[in-house]
Image 1 (cartoon, helix red, strand yellow):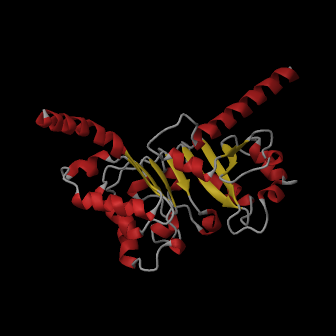
Image 2 (cartoon, rainbow, N blue to C red):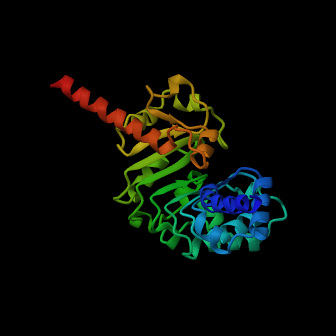
Image 3 (cartoon, rainbow, N blue to C red):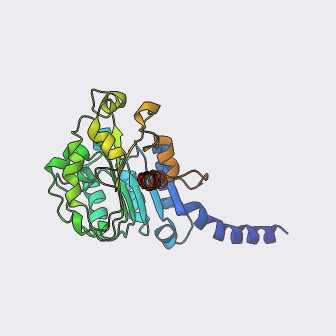
Length: 292
């Protein structure tokens, strides 16, 4: 009987493990350390993690050395979120770790469809080259903490990202809103949506103060600047700043849920943005009928 249970347990594990490891979200250093130990001590076949992990998320505070080990082992990842910040990494990380992480992203080994990260830091460049292999199949790109540098980028190859349909970036309130207009000419023809997430990072004003009387922001929110633009934020937002429900509010906990292994039925940030675009189209249609 015991032997049958062992055999049954092993059979069950063979189909449960791929489900458990398909999504890997690491929010804390201890979780990353535990996963590295699993990689180093697991009795699973060597190709298991290389083939089964598809969605990988490194949240703030994960050790860069652990991130390199994990990403090196998970070669079939198609969705990657890396919110590591160089300024927040432990003092003992080495430039070799940074170079290793950068090579993993630029070597062409990974075939990503979704990517969320700080590009300039982890590509080890001040001006990202969007022709690198890892970006050529990306459909959803979230450029984290990039808006401060946008005006210094040449955006080489960005308009040639043939598969890119969804773009998002956080816009610090210290960055001129006109920066969005300056980026738009680089959009590839395939792009259907650009989500601009307002952030108080490094700002001296609140979102409420930023929104007050901001005509350009209102025109962007209602879709008059470009129908592909959607305004949002990852921070709490008062009702008067939502322009009649046309601003996406997606808090940090919601962002982590988007990358979690247990969907709870709630809309992810892209679905929320799509709802805003649909609402604007419906409003425009109804306004057109009234005018007739």
